[in-house]
Picture 1: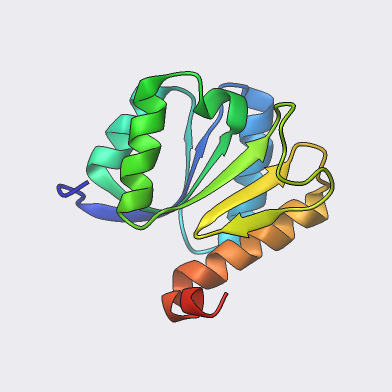
Picture 2: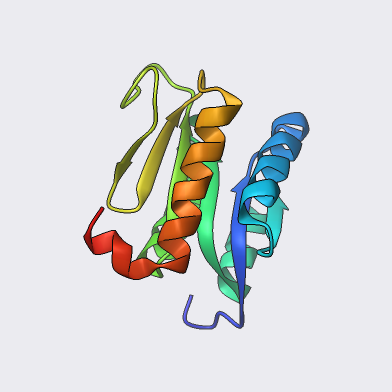
Length: 137
């Protein structure tokens, strides 16, 4: 991440094209002027992490655990200041009905509705634009 040359708003890592398009569209509506970058593989994510600084990375829990490349890239991006939003699609969930946040890592159940996703994306944008609020939240 030290070689990051440019910044981007949101990176969405999702192998399912239909879900990728939905997450990107929602992120674009909320993050507005910030670019949303779709990625479908761990290699694409690693390349983006080498060249860009991201404000938020969205990934499904099952895909996040699918390879060590994805896990290590997400860890590097988090260490560089990116927030991580994990869509929980596995049996273990922090919450069944609403999103939760711990130290810049956000958990959203896969059963969440569009309004919950929108609310969480709005909160991540506020935290990105006003990092001093992170100490209060």
